[in-house]
Image (cartoon, rainbow, N blue to C red):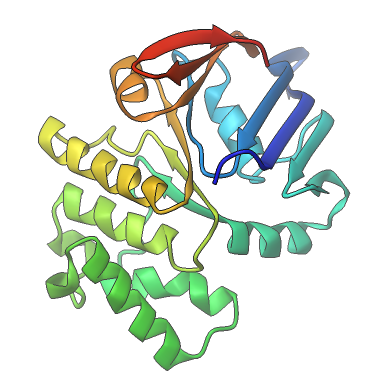
Length: 240
């Protein structure tokens, strides 16, 4: 059910010092993400979308402004508190898969549950269920180097669901995949969205964003340039 605001980024700035230069990666952005939405943060390289991803996923804190996750201003939490909230609320999928090479597919999927205190039997049972969900139960005992790129990304998708998060944040999830495999990955995300998960897609690919997302934040030079929403079968510009 859409309508409830699950993430709110309010007048957020993120500046970095590079020698004597201050780089304004984000310069006062506002983003609202509703529960159950499939939204994209889109922009070219250097636009600030990766910084926006890190802040949206509470992997980084702003130089100024506020980030609310389910109504909680995370800028007032300790690092360990943020990690706990993030671990329960958000699942991450990265372009480079980020699987641990000396763990099997099953162990990679089970790992986030270990950090949340789940027992070994529970972790393994749920990890196998999630591998079945992404059609990889027959690869449970394989290591990442024994899997194709598409299979590794599907393991990463299963891992992102380990703690049953409300939000899945996907950073260029098809960037290292061929077109056919990339479509399969996007279809998995679409299915999870239909089941109620909030999907946040970080991408430079307007074709994928417009095919799968319902809301797009267009980022340019550290600012939100415009917001578009799919209304019926057409995209329309809306106010934030």
